Length: 169
Image 1 (cartoon, one colour):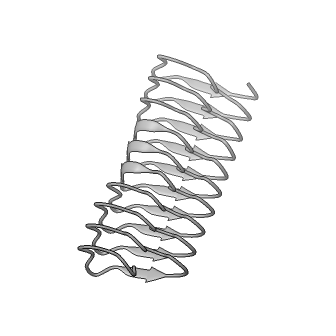
Image 2: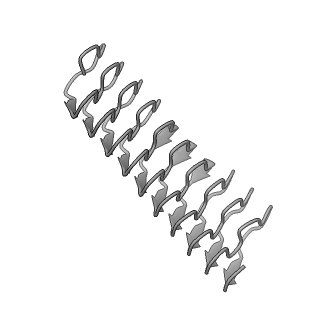
């Protein structure tokens, strides 16, 4: 937090952690460049190399892993755990992404769960959805109240509501 501005009750641990953080409160950044340039965040936790490095508007969220939440914007009450998990996620609330690249570029997601490598990778405008398995829900759009279980299950579905898909692809 060497050059940090207007940061209070925050902890920066590691080389360049929170170096240029701004307007960040009650947050913890641990790891090389974790929270390096994070702005307008509160109650955020970023653990790992470049975790939440350039994050903006991160509230009550956890980013853990190499580049987790690196470029995340306006994500609140979420958990992103794994290499590049939620790396460039935006406008997400109450989401959980577990696995390498899980929810990596997801946007406009609410109350959704992605478990497995690449699950929910570029998911957009999904709410109340569950993606279980590698690449499940990979590029879904406008899906609501859905459950996709299996490798690449529902990986490119659009405009689906109240559905269940079980099995690969």
